[in-house]
Amino acid sequence: MFDDHEILSTIEMVKNENLDVRAVTLGISLFDCISHDLERFKKNIRTKIIKHAENLVSICDGVGGKYGIKVVNKRISVSPIALVGACFSSDQMVEIAHELNDIAKQVDIDFIGGFSALVEKGIAPGDQALIDALPQALAQTQRVCASVNVATTNAGINMDAVLAMAHAIKKAAALTSNEDGLACAKLCVFSNIPQDMPFMAGAYLGVGVADAVINVGVSGPGVVKRAIERNLEQHPDLTLGNIAEIIKKTACKVTRVGELIGREVAKNIGIKFGVVDLSLAPTPTVGDSIGEIFQALGLTNIGVPGSTAALAMLNDAVKKGGAFASSHVGGLSGAFIPVSEDLNIANAADKGFLSIEKLESMTAVCSVGLDMVPIPGDITIECLAGMIADEMAIGMINSKTTATRLIPVPGKKAGEKVYFGGLLGKAKVMNVPNSTLCDQFVNHGGRIPAPIHSMKN
Image (cartoon, rainbow, N blue to C red; front, side, top):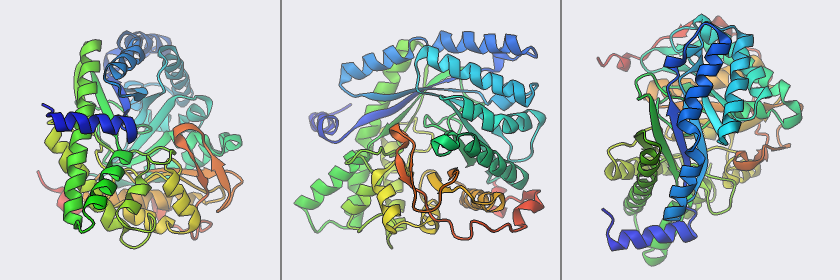
C-alpha cells in the first residue's frame, strides 16, 4: 500500500515531472486462428483481435482519467506471424500485414506488433517468407511493427539471418526514401528477445504466455532526473551510492503506478495482467529525456567518459526498484538510449559528444541497443550486417537483450537532418566509420557458436 508521503510524491510526479504510462499493450495469441486458407485466417485473426481489443482505448482512457495519469500509447502484440502463418508465401504475408494494419485502425490503437520471426537457430519456410515480406509490409502499412530474433545466448548468432536482415533493412529504407527510410523505424533485430515486453517495435506475444494478457510500460526519465536534482540541491555531498538509492526508490514508486493502471485495465477488459516493464523510454520533449539524467549526474553530456558507468548504475537501480515494487516485472525494465527519440541524445550526437562507437559500448549495459539510429544511406550491406552482428554478440556474450533499429537514410550522409515525426523524433545522420567497406566476414554465413557459459542446464 502507498503511505501518505508516497501518494503526495506520486501526485507531484504526475503534475510536474512528466510521469505517464507510456504504453498499455494487449497481447493476443493467434494460435487458435491458424488455417491454410488465407481468407479464413485473416477472418479468424480479425474476429479474435477485435473481440479482445474493441474497448481497449476507451478503457485505458477511462482508467487514466480516473487516476489522472495519461496512458500515452495503446498497442496490441500478437503471436509471431512467421509461426501462425507459416504456410503462407511472402506475398500472402504482405496481405496479412495489411489485415493487421486495418484491424489496428478499426480499434484505434497506435501500433500492432508481432509481424515477427524467431530464427536464432535456423530459418524455416515461414520465417523466410516473413523476412522476404518485411520491406513491402512495413513500407505499405502505418501501424504494423516487426521484430526478428537472430541470436540467443544458448543458440549463438545465426549469421545467415543477420545478412538477410541487412538486405531487408536496405530494401525497406529504399521503399520509403521519401520519408527518410521510415519503414526501418518499425523493425527491430534482436538478441535474446523477451516474450512479454510492451514496447514497440519489438513487442510480440510469446509462445508460453496466456491467451490474452495486459503488459504495461511505464516510463519516467523526467521523474528520475528531477529526483536526482532535488536531492543534490539539498545534499550536494551525496555519493553515487546515495544517488543510486534515490533512483531505486523513485523507480519503485513509478512501478507501483504502472501496476495499478495495468491491473485495473486488465480487470475491466476481463483478462489477465502480465508484467510491468519499467523501461526509461524518453520522448523528444525537453525534461523527459534519458540524456538529461546524465547531466543531472554531473556529466557534460551523454557520451563523454563516465557515461557507460553512469548508465550501468542507472539501469541497475531501475531494475532493483522495480523488482521491489512488483513481483511481475518483465520485458526490458531498464533504460533505453534511442538517438532520434531523445532530444538530448540527438543533440549530443550532433555536437560530437556521442559517437557510434561510444553508443555501441554503452549498449552493453543498457536495456536494448543501437536504437533509432539514422545512418548514411550508402552504407554497404556488409557493413550494416557487421553492425547488427556486433550488437548481437554483445547480447549473446552478456546474456542480455540487445537489438538494433538502424535506419539507413536514402540519399543522405552524416550530418544531414532527418525527421520521423511524433515519438520517433528527429536527429542528424550519425557518422559510421568504414561504412563503404565490403568485407567478406558476414558472407561466410553459418552460425557463430554459443558461448561456453550457455551450458547452464
